[in-house]
Length: 153
Image (cartoon, rainbow, N blue to C red; front, side, top):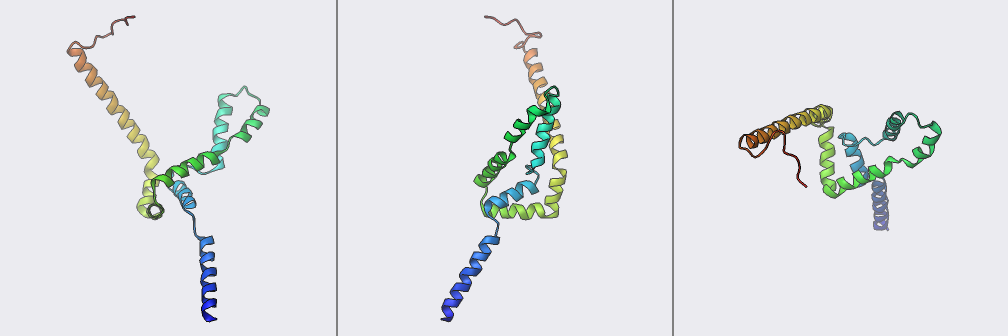
């Protein structure tokens, strides 16, 4: 009789734990929110629509109402979540959550937008220099003409 009570208590405890533990899906949503990969917010929908309203300022507000009902960020959130779930195990997601909650992780999150901008600028500058180098060398060797010859049909 005592064994049956232990089993019942164990099952009840296990079920209770399962209801309180995060699913992999929930962990991924927390991760992409935490690390700044993707803003999981209805505010994004409002921002997107607001940008289009500015772009198409001649469109009356009444035209936007049915459009706004069709815009739903939840489908994009699901796609982004699926991408993470395919690439990372639940253990890896747990480790990433721990990292992004650490001081170094918080520093990466804080500095990422600026770093991305700087990296994009550096990449664009480098690509321009590569293009100049290639074009200059090819032009000096006679492979390119400036201006280029007319296209032949």
